[in-house]
Length: 120
Image (tube, rainbow, N blue to C red; front, top):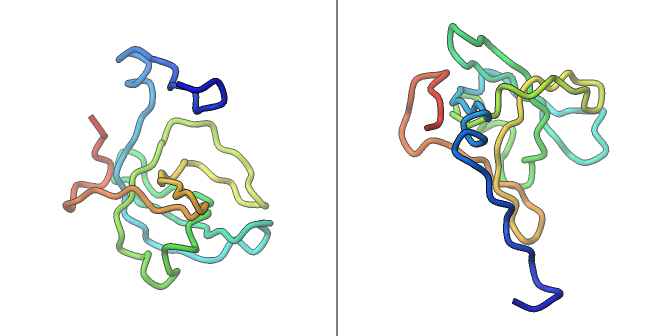
């Protein structure tokens, strides 16, 4: 590998991986996060009876039209501490893959799963 090339990922243990609680949920509402500097949505995601509905600010507008998000299942990290993002209390981190051009594509289950189902 060239000295200026990408660095390999830092190895973690299986125990480290299982500390990250990734769950499936269904978007029940979505609106623009008007306070965000970069275009972003506020998603309200239902993670089932154990976790309920949680909010997330997500910069996914380049790949995902607002009017197509309600009813979509997504994956999110649910055990981060809440943070304020442009005036919104973001309670979960909705997962996406960043394309080389900076667009973010949501990570979603291939088939419908129960809200609150944990990534294993």
